[in-house]
Length: 124
Image 1 (cartoon, rainbow, N blue to C red):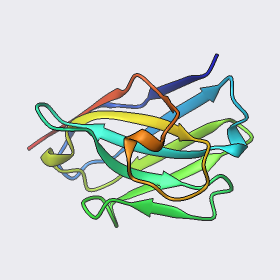
Image 2 (image 1 turned 180 degrees about the horizontal axis):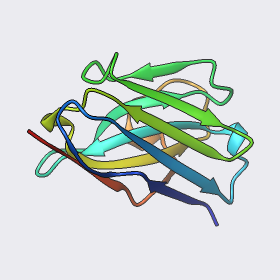
Image 3 (image 1 turned 60 degrees about the vertical axis):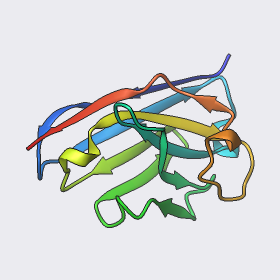
């Protein structure tokens, strides 16, 4: 049974930083591209970042480019999202997701497995 478990969310002031983690189990982690998505209240879930299987390719939404960094440790079956210069607009429930296909996609429908999410709240 595949499980993705996010952690590291919390309350932070604008301009601060947080590091999210997502631990995966029940799948051959190194064969999955991984992504982060987020959903703010009353908004649709949106793509944040993606990292390829071997971490050779990384993609970011324009809204987080230059502030967020996605990384992975295949030995630990874990991905990370380092979030710097946080803004109130970054407030959302953050989800990690696993995609068995190698080609880049920002569509939720392409991802096979999802975590339950971790809440990030940025105060002004």
